[in-house]
Image (cartoon, rainbow, N blue to C red; front, side, top):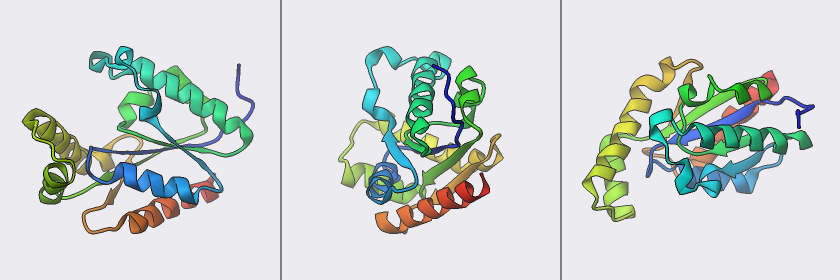
Length: 175
């Protein structure tokens, strides 16, 4: 099915333990002019293909978001993603624009959240999450399109959601 409405797609990304899920839960409670979806909802082992940047997973989500947005509301998709994983895909053409926001935080706070909040002891997992968080902080703004950073280090979930919602609404006004 070819979509009749092309809307923007909003992507909220970030490493584990930066507050992305909590932020998206807050957005879910506030949604009126957009719909919030969590990308982990459809995750299956078959999608675990880092060698091609999880292409089938990304393509599936772009098709789902396009179909959902046919009701006339844009989608805010929450999950770990970067522009280079979506922009080259043929399904990218289903949207007028993709907007990227990444929740990030300072290393010390992130490590505290990982170890004390989630009680993670797998050092490889800790380092992978820390590395992605650093990569977003250092490279996100220079991506094409740019990834807007939202530093959650000292924000409550409500404050982070307020900033994210303001970011979404500003872009909706420009559409």
